[in-house]
Figure (cartoon, rainbow, N blue to C red):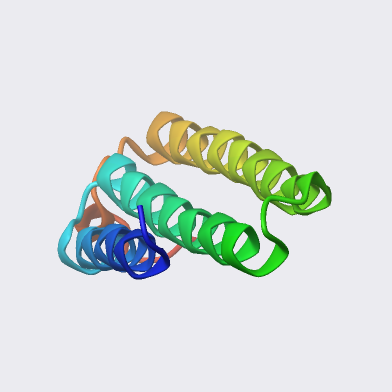
Length: 101
């Protein structure tokens, strides 16, 4: 796969994720959109690293750090969604008027 093809797929992933974040009301769908956006940026990072470094394995550490940050972000996000649902019985953003009460 060429660099342009990988960057095009990464941009498409990011765009689908952005559309999901902006168009959905469900907390879970918004979190999935965020995950797609981070996956798109990770794919672009890896593609640029592969093109620039010529396969030098030192750049893989950045991809591992990004994946670790994704896992932490997903765990914290779903914990927040679970807490909001348990306390407010709100599963979509329209049911939340304010976070502070």
